[in-house]
Image (cartoon, rainbow, N blue to C red; front, side):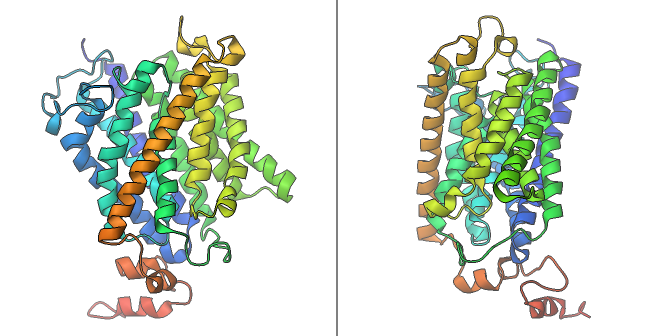
Amino acid sequence: MNIDPAATAWLLAATAMVLLMTPGLAIFYGGMVRSSGVLNMLMMSFISIPLVTVVWLVTGYSLAFGDDAGGGLIGNLGHFGLSGIDPTTVHAGSGIPELLFVTFQLTFAILTVALVSGAIADRAKFSAWMIFVPVWALIVYAPIAHWVWTPDGWLASFGTLDYAGGLVVEIASGASALAMAIVLGPRIGFKVDAMRPHNLPFVLLGAGLLWFGWFGFNAGSALAANGTAAAVFLNTLVAGCLGMLGWLIVEQVRDGRPTTFGAASGAVAGLVAITPSCGSVNTMGALIVGVVAGTVCSFAVGWKFKGGYDDSLDVVGVHFVGGIVGTLLIGFLANRAMTGAGGPEGLLYGGGLGQLGKQLVGVIAVAAFAFGMSFALGKVIDRTIGFRVSREDEIGGIDFALHAETAYAEGVNGHGHQVKRMGEGPFGH
């Protein structure tokens, strides 16, 4: 097959859009934390870009998308160091260069591990995070991507559907976030201090960048410039809108006031839920997916207070729960207008319970694997070099303790003396 110029041009743009999601996530998360930890939060996302890139090019891509090594569990190392792939290699059945597919999938892997950081905000050692990121990409992300997105993967063969990452990205990161929140334990002041977002305009800006990038995330997964990509694009817009409305309605009824924080969170919840289902449901289905996700996730973010796990930035409540909602709703709303002639249909379209069962198996398998592996990895790192900063550093401000910087000139939490110390020396004032 020759290279398709239109598909290649679209996927080049989509790849850049998905890469932008990680800086967008950094700003989104950065606005949500306290002012003493914003730089560390930004860095946890940004450092994921080079760390995952290196391991992805060496072994990650081959483990995820290489020929099956047996049992549909993991790829082989036939593409170790991108061996056998050059600018003329065309990705099977797509008409796009293989190197572009490698890069597109790399941006997914980067974002997924960056999502986990939100659960351990304000208390994780940066050095420990730098070890966690590349190892997690290889032992958690790559196997799950192989299960779901390669023809020989066991979940793909079983018939579980995940168009753009409800299982691979959202549930994998959400389950891992829960594991890491348990490993590190709650922040000092959890359930006592308010710990409000320090910069809501940052949160909205980050949400907007994520929403923009999500069009590349979902519609780019069509690997073509065609009607399917257009339908997925619209589904993504619709679900984000209805997710926001669903969350705001809950806030209005429950709390008497809709909030900017709720608007941003609701949009992201809708986008999370449509990620697995955008290629399986029609536009009305996307509307349902969005409003259900926005509503359910608005309640789910409060479960951490009852469960006792400190998921700092609600990765579990939004990404894990939203991913489950979107993945399971495929079993109800899958439509052959999207899945194609002879494709699976959901329960509401006469397809019976079969597809719902397949989606449920995928949810349980991915969640259990991601949680177990992440918990084990986190424990190993914690018992060797330690994963959590000292009590003094956490109270005094993680930005200055770990990076010798503060985000704002006036200092944070009354620690203006730290900024003065930073200004001392030949370039001080």
